[in-house]
Length: 259
Image (cartoon, rainbow, N blue to C red; front, side, top):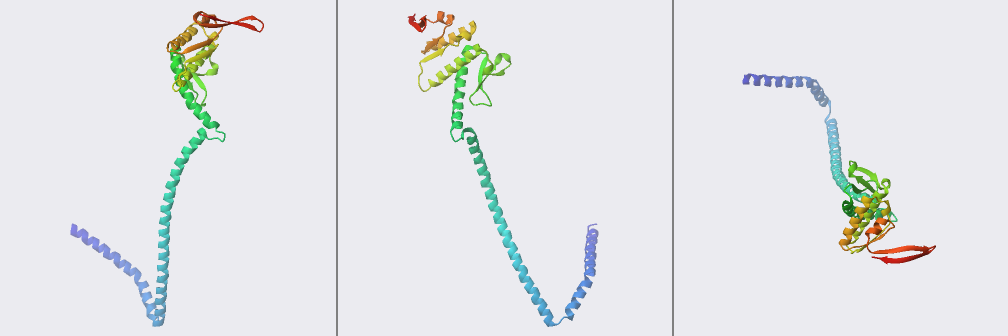
């Protein structure tokens, strides 16, 4: 079977070659007759023309090869430029981000950016103080503002509210927590031994007022001197050392000290 298949394959190839020779024979014969009819001078002229055309073709091939070499070099150069451009784009993204955060001719963006970083620390310290007063609230920075607060109500499934929408008592607790947080942060570098609170206690209910006073008592035990300015009777009854200002008449007041 192998010999038979090989024989058939060889015969097919011979048939194809015979067919090709048969097809090209008229052209070959015509070409031979043409050359046979030409004189030696005509053949020399045609041979010279062929040589000249070969030279021209060789020159063209050399030019094309040079263009190919130049194209390859340009491709390598463009690839390097593309890599450099990509690196520049990545570097530009960093500068664009910095420009977005802090870039402005008057430095206002930079100040706000630095303040927002400091504010973040203040909020962290304030939340530590707020935990001592109530487990209900948590302060967070607003996503769309670097220097504004929202309050999270844990008793309301973690709902988020603006500070502007909280009650007077809640606002006092938040302000007290922020004041204590700022004091705690300041004391990391410089010792702050005193804290003064002006009013606000009148907006608290009895329970919140007691919680706030307990926090202030704890701070006093830690060595801080707490000064409270208030007209609330509950405060007067629970503060031992007092500087009292009593109005005597229109435009005249009397200062006294009570223990």
